[in-house]
Image 1 (cartoon, one colour):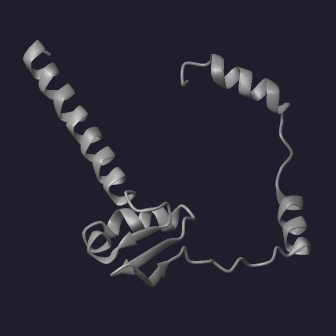
Image 2 (cartoon, one colour):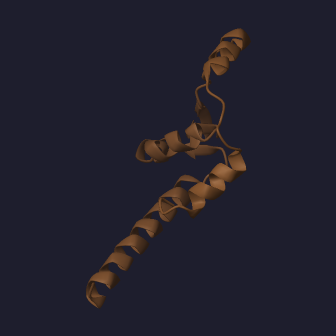
Length: 111
């Protein structure tokens, strides 16, 4: 690649990173867990990402809390121990120790 294309690619990558940083900082200018309704409307995608990571975000209107954005709690199914044992009993035993297998895999050309 010529130097001009490389500089253009680096500039584009830097601009994207800078944009993401500015958007994140703009969303977090309120105290750690709240944001105004107008900012929330403009940055809903980023707020959804924050909630997905486990953060709780309070959306305010005229300084008063009106909505709390929280992550969805997924109901986990209990593990059926008998079914798990039956499944693992059907699985074949490894032909070699795991450490040897990993060493061989790392030394092969695939990695």
